[in-house]
Length: 278
Image 1: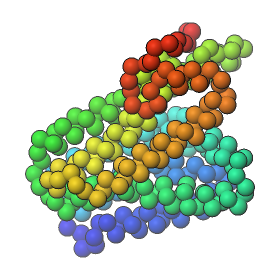
Image 2 (image 1 turned 120 degrees about the vertical axis):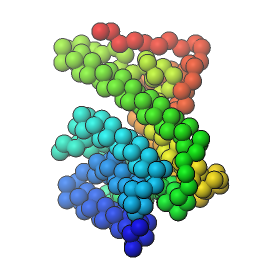
Image 3 (image 1 turned 180 degrees about the vertical axis):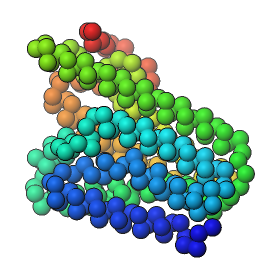
């Protein structure tokens, strides 16, 4: 094993990433730098623990492999939407800047966007630390977790692809001088949940937490703070995102009434799902 505790290696990575994303936000005036490293840094953290075990721990290797798949998929999806291109800032930060004073947003950028979100990215990977400290053989829970993780990964992939296809259609309609109808996605997985990709994203990190539980032999692990805070972040993001959607699309209120906010479920009666015309 490494002479240096891998947790402290991750702390140094965290400090470096916080400094880099904060400085870049000041230089460029864009505030999506944490978004740009969101799918990369957690992969590095988990591999730090797997490497510290000399790549000899089957559970850590499995966790690192699964998180790498998560990161590769998310990086691809973020890149094709232009997230890494100049000007690829999340539209919500522009809206928030308009609602906050300059000084208030500067503090929000430092303490929430940069520090809080980067700390969260470390916290959600710390079940790997639990597995590092408890090098036990793989068990039945690991198999269940692996299957669940892959199912949730597939679900998020499908949801993002459906969203991508819809927005590409919407762009074509607009370019042709036609008014897109519907104006937001309401079919496929989005008929069962207003944010199915949010659900599957969170679910994958709850599964990572369970891997740590499998290693320690108990579900009572302090690392539950990671997925709990991630869930809280997504709840806040959902509320903020939907406030913007309602201001743009009055018909979004009807969609909210009939469709589950996060967890996929059957639509409520009394609402009509509008399908995009091809």
